[in-house]
Image (cartoon, helix red, strand yellow):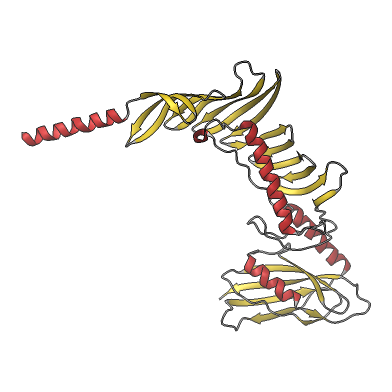
Amino acid sequence: MKIFRKFEMLIVMVICNVSYSQTKMLYNGAFDRGKAKYFYYENNYERIFDGTFNYSDGYCSLSGALKNNLMTGTWTQTEGDAPSFTFGKKVIGSYINGKRNGKWACTIFENKLRKNYVLTFKNDTINSEVSLPKLQGLIKDGKFDGNWILNDGGSETIASFKNGVITKYVERYTSDGAVIIKYLPNIKSPLNVDFVNLSGNLYGFEIFEFDKKYYDSDLQLKISAFVAKVKFEINNFFSLACLNRFNKEINICEPILMVTVRENARYWKEKETRYTDENNTTAGLLGGKGNSSEENGQRSRNYTLAGRKALSIPNPNYTCNEEGTVVCEITVDNSGKVIGVVAGIRGSTNVAKCLLDQAKAAAQNARFDAKDDAPGKQVGKIVYNFKLN
């Protein structure tokens, strides 16, 4: 009987503790740089915001609601000399389960003139046109798209994107239009061909027209700076910056520096058609098997170069646990020397960096017979097949 009573008392104590921890309380007092009034409950010594929230520090005010620490419903932030609003800013937007959703509006007050700006969100992701004083463009599902213009004092950036992929990027001075840096892919007439891994995604692509003062790393730095400026402008207008606790920065996917895979495939298809129509030749097959202790498997290679005979096509080293086909475009002069290589063009089945690097290094050391009447720059291909043991 005593045991039963003890168990009964224990149940009552647990229920009381649960009830106590879920009891809503009201706080009204000092908060950050001002004062706040909000509802909350305690859960294992953690304060959980749950209910309406209002804050003001004399210059900035913030109001909305939270449910289990997640912002929900409509939130409003005002900055400036409210309520007269001869100068200031007002931001209104909605949250669902802690994420921005729907239309967000920002109104700028300047000497009683109002300027309105709008963004549309879906689960914290921008999905709308961006039209701000220094910035015009389009973001689809968090990715840059369409045409963009960014005015940044003495310079301006003009860029185009397709589903997060950069298709044009130009920076120039606003005073005289002098170009600072440019990236203008032209898939039908590449000027300079190289492999660059700037975004963590590695495909066959080309940097085409490029200011001679800059290299690929400088271009990537420029684009990163452009993205940072875009984020700054958008956050400057639409973030709830009154309180760091509730200020979630608006993030945007950084664009990829490459031509689209579809455009790249179309370009190489056109080149292959020209090979077939003009040359109508088939290359011989050369085989090789790794015999070094650092090589992991079998390799074979074949080549295409109209009217030319291969004197030496070295096998690439095999230094990683990857397998597949790597197709290299080669440019050969009339002495038979390889003067340019692009590894990973259309037809490649694996573009792992270790395979691309070794295929490119091997192709650069290939040698063909000399031919006085051959073009000064004759284009062909070497195909490397890597297979793990």
